[in-house]
Length: 32
Image (cartoon, rainbow, N blue to C red; front, side):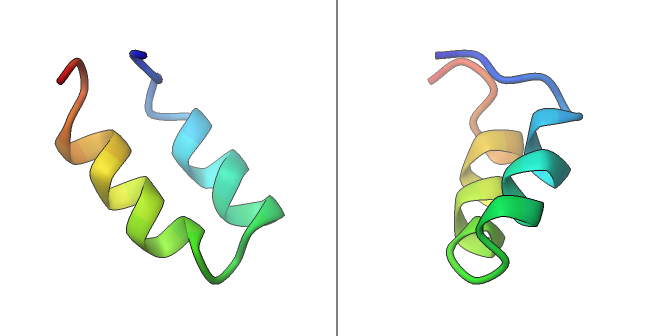
């Protein structure tokens, strides 16, 4: 699922721990 850039910081706010890795995967993998 494709997530826009703003979604990364949003998730980071919800999950300040796991979001660090998740956000990297989301931004690093925009459609894969």
